[in-house]
Length: 228
Image (tube, rainbow, N blue to C red; front, top):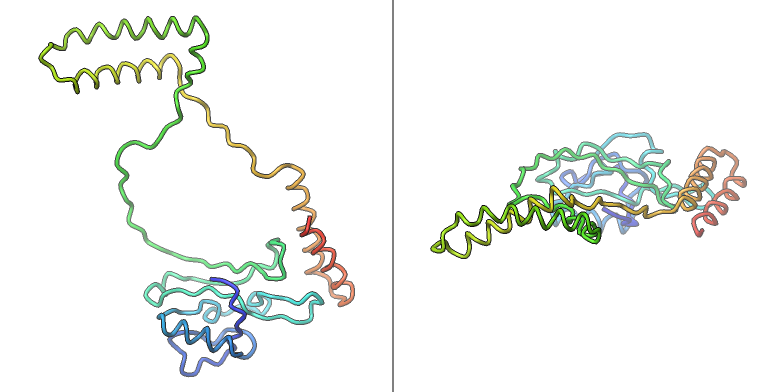
């Protein structure tokens, strides 16, 4: 998947196993190289297989809005060809580029794998032990539970003593301290999300604009927003 800078066209004569007849334009040199690469590696070019309107095949547009090409593709192993249900471009996706987002729809059956052991949990909230009352409660609870260790004979192995003590500590921590609450920090600030939304609105207006000169001006405005 990526920007191959390759045009394939709709003529797939001799390349039927590698590509379909739905690609835009005419094949160029990079298109031949890309097609040969896919044939050598037993790949199928998704963007050439599925029937869509031209606006949903276009993956790149020039700044003036006059030149449109399909040069970004998703390829898949011919073994898994039936898993690829569709590919198309998404003009509305705001990615800050003169390329459109290429979307692929897959249906894959995966075998569930078993993970040994429990999933990792949050750490116990040991900060509560700084409070005298909580600390006294924790200590008293552990001591009370330790009375049960007397039932373990001296002949018992060290491993049994350790397992019993570990169980006491875990149980006491769980009931007295509890676990820390996981706090996920926002990776983008509110101001950044606001800029992204404003840039998205500029792109929507640019796509809907019909006047060539105005569209070129809006393209420059969009690039300015992208740099922000």
